[in-house]
Structures are given as C-alpha cells and as structure tokens.
Image (tube, rainbow, N blue to C red; front, side):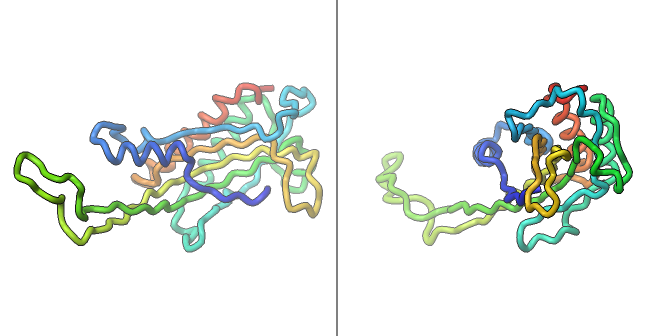
Length: 214
C-alpha cells in the first residue's frame, strides 16, 4: 500500500470550527462522524464475475503522526477484522484465510487506523477598534496584552483498502488499490464508544458501495 499522510478532512475541520463558535450544534460526539468511499481506479470493473475471493490481512495497521505512540490507539482488532469479513461475505465473496494461499485471492484487504492531533490557537483580548460604545466613549475593548489559548481537535480514522491482488508486483513500493473506505470522527468518548463507532463506519462504507456486490 502506498504511504498515506492522514489529516483531518477540510469539511470536518470547517464543521468543527463553526460548531465551536456557536452554541447550537451536534450534541453527541458521534454526530461528527463521517464516512467516505473512494474508487481509486475508475476503469476497474467491479462487476467482473470472475472476482469472487479475498484475503483479509490478519493485523490492523496502526498509522500514527510523529510523536504519537501506537499504544495511544487502543482498538478491538478482532472485532474490526470480523466486521470487515462479515460485510465481504454478505456481499457474496469467499474468504481465503490461509496466508500461504493469499496470492491466489482476487482481492487483498488491508485495514488500518490513525489518530491525528490538530492544534489551533484562539486569541483573547487585545485592543479593539470599536471607537466608542453606548455613549461612554470607550476607546478599546477587553484587555492587554492578549491571551492565547491552544486547543486540540483529536480525530480518529479507520481505513479499509481493497487491493487488486492479481496486479500486485513483488518488490514494488506500491499496491494497486482499487477501493478505499474511510471513517473519521472525534477521538473522544469511552473505548467502547470509539470501537462501536468504528464498526458502524465499516458497515456504512460497504452499505454505500453497492457496486461491490457479487
């Protein structure tokens, strides 16, 4: 799989900043969750009836930013892999579980997770340019010097890659990825809550990709 630089999507970043400024907005952390699917190769024929099998890698890859320890991302790995397997089987595919037979499968499926810290500064105070208010002739606002508050939006992601196993070139630095499912949301809440939201994101990825059905 090609290297990925994971960052919070522009749409989510804008939503978080807007909601942070106004009291009316989503009430629960899962209300910020979003799921995307991407077809990497528009010419790929997902309807090819000869593609019936897949091999699911037995480890969830942990992608982290520099300075972030993989141990900071605690997931129920077996539950996540089982949910991907269930969705693929329900779509009509047959799993080839044996690692030594992986190269005989039509698809290779890789699952990875990521946590990203997004820092931003909020300025408070300073001299304003109101020029007066309420007839009192105030020449400025607030206080000086200004104060800076640093905030962190911590975002978690889960990615499911479907790779064309027939086109894998031994020794190559990249994999022929044909489909990507990505679920992202605030990395907040209990561990059970985060894992449940990850499982829901996986279901949604496949639900919004009906063309994968056999």
